[in-house]
Image 1: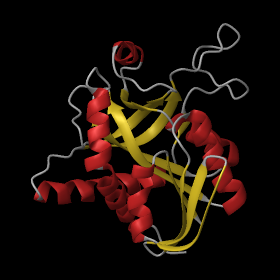
Image 2: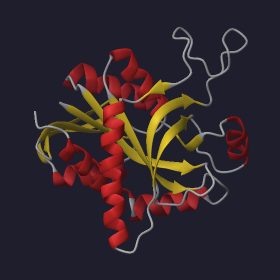
Image 3: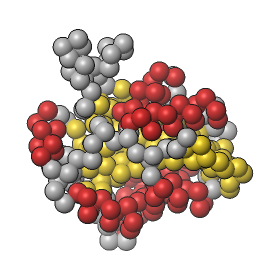
Length: 240
């Protein structure tokens, strides 16, 4: 069973429209649709924005539905110079940039785990990169200029839209983008021994124009990207 998690309705509605839905339900800020997608038994779920909602949502997928793989495809703000709106980032490592239990623990360390970074499943990362390149190629045929990247994604309970961007770029020069759920999902999957992959599409530059750019991208582009990337990725996984 594959769990496909999104924070917002725009990140899941396209997937629901193309899956064979067998059951649906809600509870505690969590909404799900169980069925078949691209030949795989799946649960598509919307958990809400932020680390707490994401952690709760992915743990529910694992405990209630018994998912053995977690896939996330959503939006993020670009940090690295040269990233454009519509570019795709496949996360290899995840860090929570707002986690600071110092001086008891080093900054960014997760207490009790002595870890800063959580790594996505290497095989799923490779497949997600291939899937993303397929989608980028299709978009190029339509006149698009989508680039695909893989590397570090940072997470925090903040919508980054101004001064904080400069600090994040200085402190995390390797970070490609910033979002609000990935680090929490990565930590929960690590604790449960469940392989995961997270793909982000750049919706804005995490700058002063980010709110307007983000909202426009959510309305105009998000469902199309999510459906295309997830379907391409699932098609590369062996049917169960």
